[in-house]
Amino acid sequence: MKTHKLYLEDSYQKMCEAIVLEVKKDQEGRQIIILDQTLFYAMSGGQPGDKGIMTGSSGEEQVVDTRYASGEKVLIHHFMSEDTQFKIGDTVTCQINWDYRYKNMRLHSLLHLAGMAFEKMVGPQKCIGSNISDRGRMDYEFFEKIDLDILAREVQGLIDGDHEIRTYGEDGNEVRRVWEMKPLGTMPCGGTHPKSSGEIREFKLKRKGLSSQGQRIYCELIDS
Ligand SMILES: [Zn+2]
Image: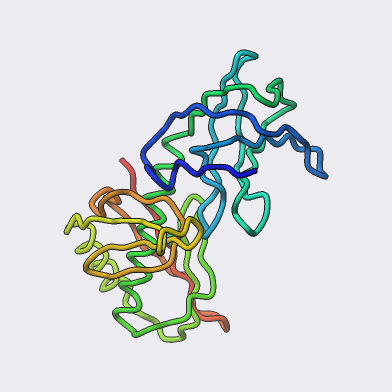
């Protein structure tokens, strides 16, 4: 059994049909649905799992989170808000919460731009953690205070350049994915991303003071 990941082929697709392969509950009693294919991005690489709705002949149900079933990233668990009426073999229509996903796509690429621009400024660094929620954050084992205005100008230049962003599987591999933007280069990433850096639009960088672990930089989108 396997879930085909439609979001790897087109990160802008918002709706698809799918067949229910399995209906079960996890140890905490949360309702899980497994589909033959999905548009719901499964939490990975700091990017949150998608939310949205699934509709079938028995009605409409809410998907509240999406996660991989295991580290092999083969099967995807859709977590439902309540007990499901869907049965194995049912055809359902999936619709992702596009506002949520698109923000996560833009924020994810913003983190890559800021991280790569940061390393361009100070040389290769070890990123010890990164995460995306309302805003993005990156933690570096770097102990000098960098000038955030200079970093922000660098990132702004990359956004204004409206550079093409590509994602693809390394040697056609579905799990080992690559993010690429020409002026910066490539980095391993299995997330969903906009087609061009211009879509990130306006942003803000903030720093949490230096700590014994290094420094934490926050990246926020400014949406009017
Ligand atoms: Zn990434």
